[in-house]
Image (tube, rainbow, N blue to C red):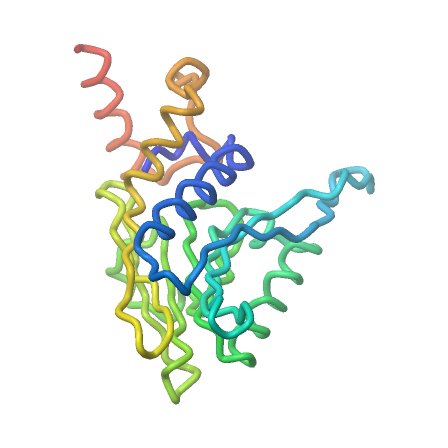
Length: 222
């Protein structure tokens, strides 16, 4: 994962939603459809000013054979969902709605800013887990609503392919995250605009910063 992409998250997020929707649709049966949806979030700025509402997109998988019932919601979590304000409140409400309605919820957090607000908190995981990023899934078929699947993700490793639950009668489909990020990077031409001579925002911890510096030095020698 390129930590420099977090500064361009609005554009990267839009690409991820589109690419994920297309990739999932190719795996779904004839009676399941993937659609992108959106909610409006007001982001407060400094000096008590308020920006224009931001459109946060997510993916719904619907069952066309049952009148469009929502089967699965997929969220690429944004920093807005992890910072105090309207975005975090709306996101918590969405989590509750999915669980109460027995809808599968898959959360994918590829940002480091803010306090992680997934269904499983960072504090609940063993300290040795790589925690740069995380994916979490709630399956509506589980009787225990407190049970979750967690994929801790290290910044230094290839992003994983994660399982996307559907209806009880369906096998999982797979969402491979690394190709999505790679294509988002290429289509956004970030190789032309990112200044890798400066540290990313938010900054990396000392060990990850050393790792990133070694990669950048090796790339500069090519």
